[in-house]
Amino acid sequence: MAQEEPNRFVEWFHLLRGQVPVVRQHLKDWVEAVREEPALIWQTTAVRYAVYGLGAVVLLWGASQVAGTIAPPATVRPQAKTADFHVVCTNPDCRHHFVIHREFGYREFPVDCPKCQKRTGAQARRCNSATCRGRWVPLERQDGKLYCPVCGAQFE
Ligand SMILES: [Zn+2]
Ligand SMILES: [Zn+2]
Image 1 (cartoon, helix red, strand yellow):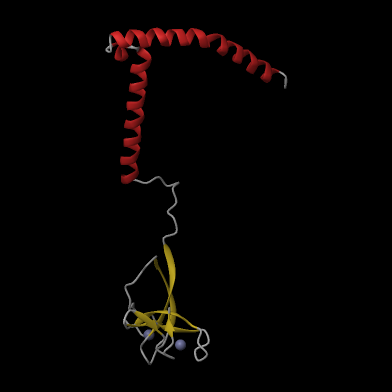
Image 2 (cartoon, protein in one colour):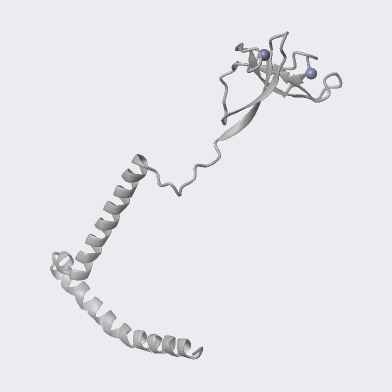
């Protein structure tokens, strides 16, 4: 059983090698004929079907592209395009710290605070200064730089 495959392969190889001079001669004759009569390219069945095949592939590809834009297949899972954003409420009576889930690069702060119901949720980050020691603080922007409003440390 295991012996069969290599033998068949050798047979094919010999068969193919035997065909090479014949094919080469055919090709040479064809190239000669085409050189004299260029319209022969289109009259050659193999060439014509290759072009038809290529056209069909392009059409199918185009159709699949169009179908993809209308209804993306369910098997294609969207890549992770969202992230968690820490938010600290800047309302002095609230200071609620919460996390929202939004697309990457989300910048539309302030957001609604779920605790005091005011639109005072500012984007937050951890301040690791000696004063704040990892406290979540709302970001404060001055001259394009970000500062901690609690201790005044500058974030890079
Ligand atoms: Zn609040
Ligand atoms: Zn700080």
